[in-house]
Length: 113
Length: 114
Image: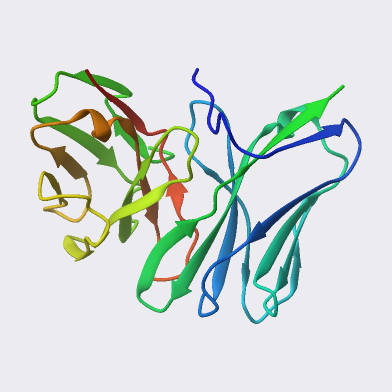
């Protein structure tokens, strides 16, 4: 299938290492954030979310950190696997009835063996 | 079905042709969203439905774009008189609640206007 994000920033990590993907969001009023994974030819897949009243949330092999002071979000993937290779997007939501998501530009994660 | 389903998967249209893209959301999901994703970009919001009501259409790029969800389930995005700049992947997403809940995306429809 076609590649998603032909000219996106790329992060290359070795299998088994930890990955950290960063995102700067735009709106200080945003109160809900989501990380999505998008593989070539597929729609975005939910990974983990966090609300603005938290600064850290953990899932299975993934952790999201939120720094509201500098409007920065990061996704940490532990023990990165080849199946983690994809483009990763952060998305922000203003909350309330403003349910639309605003996506960042994305980062391509390449896992090398 | 188990997930959000979109059809067709691929669509090639001649410039000036009208197209209709279909989205079947997850059963029972109140909210439905359409996004446009150009190659190498993140998805960009087009429009949002809560049941059958179109509450936000601020992202529709022109009056050639029209979306509907008449019975609060299936939605159709229609593009009239397609132009080359309309070429993109059109993604549909649905979520259970009205606000701040996880949105599930379909695989998208890749539209190519020639």
